[in-house]
Length: 209
Ligand code: ADP
Image 1 (cartoon, rainbow, N blue to C red):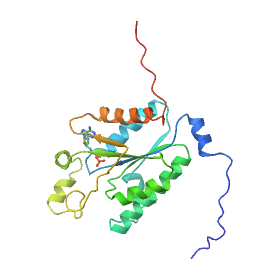
Image 2: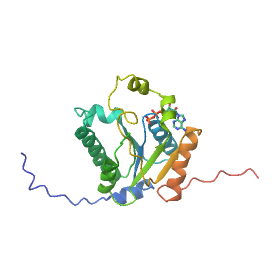
Image 3: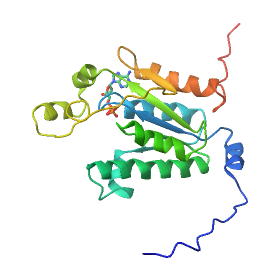
Image 4: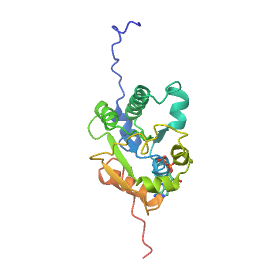
């Protein structure tokens, strides 16, 4: 066991608030949650594209960059899933401190895990975005062919089929995607953040007359 008794936090001169001021926007976690195929990655990506064009500082944590590195070695047992989310939460908290808007795109099916992440950051820094797509629509989209495999019994404990998904009760944003374009959904997220003062409001387009 390592000695941790003498780890005393250093009082750094430059604070989160200084970094936010320099960047001209607040730093928050945009926590996208929803079933597989609901649109988390697609919308997180579109929101990031739009924010980048607005000059905002962003980053996305997703299965590709987390499971392959930081969380390599974690499997899909209950304990490992919990640890997976805990580490993502801690890394997201560091991004907030760094002044960055961090999007996370994980199914994160359990309310208690999402609430745990909410509890480690300050009030208003955790924006839960429920990518609210009915399972029939997700299954029809099936972008990675996973529902087909799960129905055929090739994948066990698949969320929504033989593993539960606990929908958020009071998400900051309840984002319905069925029958809407990716653009519309992304615009809804950006408009919400601007209305709450997290990011600057976009300049209205100049009229020609
Ligand atoms: P997840 O990350 O939640 O598993 P993906 O983003 O990988 O889901 O896949 C969602 C699929 O649904 C994509 O193929 C996307 O093009 C499609 N789609 C259709 N309409 C929408 C919408 N309004 N928002 C997001 N995705 C949509």
